[in-house]
Length: 287
Image (cartoon, rainbow, N blue to C red):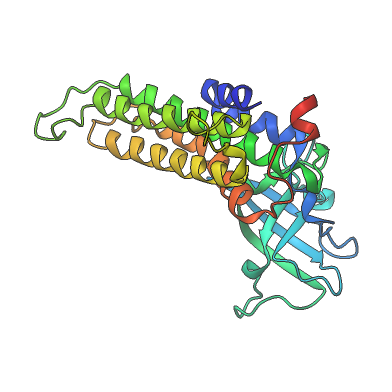
């Protein structure tokens, strides 16, 4: 599974992300979603750079104060809202502390209204996807982290292919695209190998006193791999900055934008979602 999702992220980060989030409702373990108020204004979602903008009125379950909330979208046909078909995300993860009323105070009532509330693309999924269960945390974290590692590898290859033809003084010694890409790709290779060994339970060292990787929770290895993927994406972009912009924009911009939702979701998956399971379970074994 690690290899499959890594290859998908490498081939096309945007397609990998859209396919994954369209197939799996990964936010389902958070619990019931907040549905739009049928008696009030219908909810509206529209795409904006880097994510989505939500407007509408929702009901908050009484007596429930979770850290993260699921906000579901129902089209407002009277106002010609954007199409929320199965091809568009209609379920969004929102930090409860981010919900504020107009004067900046937290939302505490059972009903609240949002106007042009920004949701990053990586915190959106589909209600039509197969719902993951609380015990599928290992599958979720592994899949998203693997896609991030693959996307980061794709970026290093794109960096290596850039034309370094600019003033010699602009690029520091040893920071030419090919050299930088080789350095970052080596970091990724080592991290992918270590993560694969951890998930397969290969011992860290040889000999009688060898300690299996499985003594350390897989979630810890996934968190480290995610940090490395973020570092490589950031470093790759930074090292491409001195290169001249092309007629269609700065090099690597599209790939970085396509990778951003995966990185956003990976942070949620690894750092914030309850760690119900450290080892991929049924979904990883059967899909």
